[in-house]
Length: 71
Image 1 (cartoon, rainbow, N blue to C red):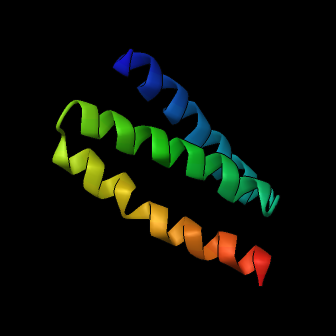
Image 2: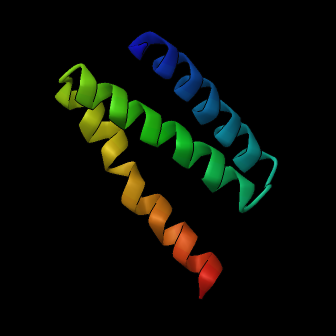
């Protein structure tokens, strides 16, 4: 189960990076944000603090992007 989450999350992160390079905002932050959430969850489930730190700290950055859309 965790391996599937990791693979799907990796795919979402890479697609999010591609969308950023193609300047497809705001779709890029939604896709990449889902990938970061998936990796954070996978890090939590496997008690991997490095993964949780890396991707967990990306989530507030994406929240700024979401708030930018609303305001």
